[in-house]
Image 1 (cartoon, one colour):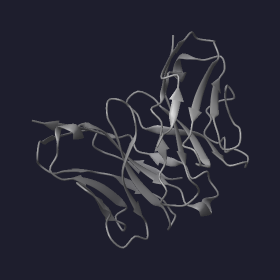
Image 2 (cartoon, chains in turn yellow, blue; image 1 turned 30 degrees about the vertical axis):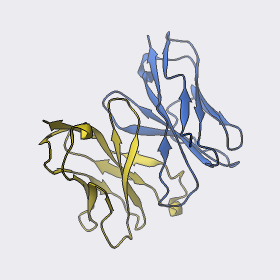
Image 3 (tube, one colour; image 1 turned 90 degrees about the vertical axis):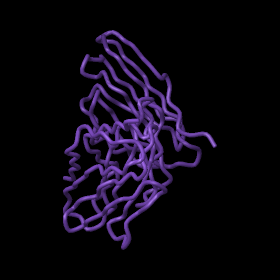
Image 4 (spheres, chains in turn green, blue; image 1 turned 30 degrees about the horizontal axis):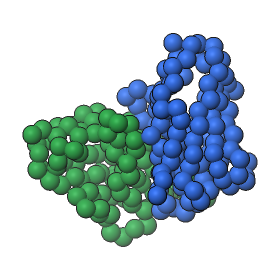
Length: 118
Length: 115
């Protein structure tokens, strides 16, 4: 079974600084996908970034980048130039590969609550 | 375009009552998922629909939970004889197909409170 671990229940960062949110995963599969979602207090799940296990380069989407270290099974999210609006819960998730015959649902970590300080 | 919608946004019910939650996926999305999110926790998978295939119910926590979907349209999640531990936000998501990169688009959720 797959498992996602987010060891930081809460993080603080000063506005305009960069912050790294940790995510490690456990899987025996060679093919998988990793996602980061943002959940503000409104409750909606907002997709941020995706990394495929066979992607040669780390994913980037605007101020978000994913520090993917396959050998260490880590997929940390880096947010550059933090903004007050970045304050939210952040979830790392993994999608099971099609070979598993599963529903390909997402397996989520427990999340990290990020607070950006003015 | 319209995103995933869910209704009601909030539901308060008494222990033992049945509740029905509704999800309208993005038009054309063949895959539909239900998740449960307890307070302060991550999302737990409940059930998955893909087109006209038999649903994957492996995440349903008990036989009090059931869900239906007609074709590639609306889905309803039913919880019978609700218990206080059923209190959570129930999130629905849809996606185009089985392709690896395609992300799931989430609805705003239904917050269920069982008194």
